[in-house]
Image (cartoon, rainbow over all chains, first blue to last red; front, side, top):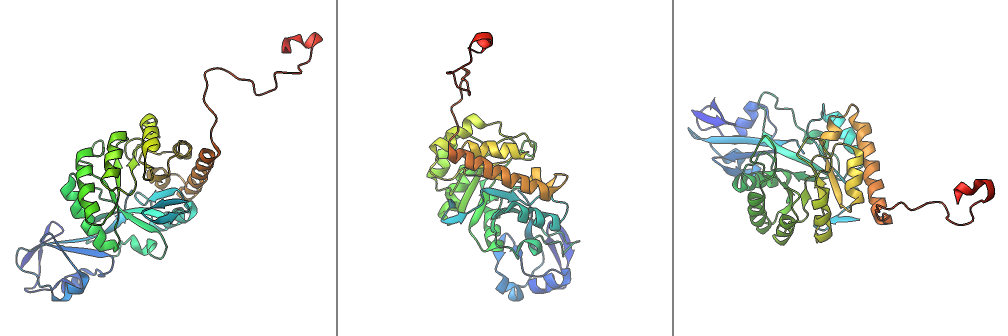
Length: 66
Length: 260
């Protein structure tokens, strides 16, 4: 299935969870925020949040800024 | 002691964390500055560099994190970023920044005020970045801003305090701390803002792009302290008329008559 991840198309196995997505990207869950279709998902829900075709996922973190 | 929203700050220098050459230099500069408040921004994770995480360098230290809403072009985008910042930081501190024009990066006063009203109601500690407009400063503090952050000059320009006449009025009228933000390019600019009675200054570019950012952070710390001490000591009045520093009485006479 295809999702939009940080503005780009990404092919994922069907019914992937957010935890599986983070693992496949090599990203630790700490210090990240995830928006799924413009709603913030709490970290304790990542393992039970299943992605669907066409979902828009944003993975965001702090960077240097003034 | 500076107090913002009930939190005490011994240092009146706040640092931005952008544009440093490395996380190590950034952390050393922050330590050298003695600052207790640092700003950070939110961006999409660079999926090609999953380990590039600024919080690794910052999280061991005991700063107040002030996430900004940089990139927001209107109140709605700023509010969305504020929610993400709260989720990422676990705190309500927020530097509200709404800059619709990428060329000037000047803040939108109407959208900033609108977002302040909403975010204060949602429990955020809002420190709005604003143009140096005394009326807007009053409206923002009436809306519940925890401090106001007027610009000295546009972001990243290193032009110094070009807005001193308006900033003086903002300071005179403020019931919340005034943090001069943006455009401070040299320690003398920071000292000047502090001498005027600003409660703090926020500096980023001048330190991060300096030849030696750690030494520059030290210089800014000294300047901020000097400026604050001078303000508390009470500066003398400016005058157009000269006034001798040496005594006017008891001058020598005879061939030194020209001294009288």
